[in-house]
Length: 174
Image (cartoon, rainbow, N blue to C red):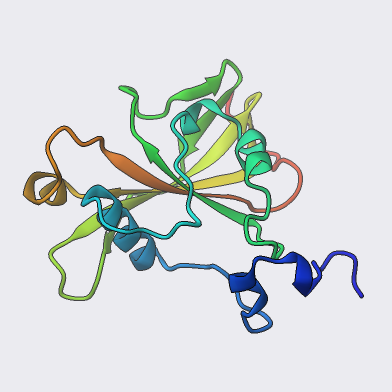
């Protein structure tokens, strides 16, 4: 037996019965749908934890706390987090920050739906060097916030964190 593959009897029952090769890889539309349900205080996927201080933790700290949540060797992590910062890209530490990569994309929840949101991809800059850590940040569009969100509700984001490959990429941002 491969030591890297968890034994079926060590997995949660719901996971042990999944077919070989199954992965938790929701599409952008599915992630935005989960975020919409979260904002509307409806039932959401229990595998996605809430992290209150998400933007104050390094990717290593975040992923260590939720390493391989399903026991399937996953290399992506998902988190709900409330937005609590005034600036666009809050710094993690003095020498680390998330920098937006590319343009913000519009994502529809379903074809023909009036609910939509946005996806931003960010890269972690550490000591002036672009790393392999990526963050896809999803948020619901303002019409959702105005239409059906309960009063005094926080603005929630859904974040996908992943490491594109081991080691930093050699691009300087000094």
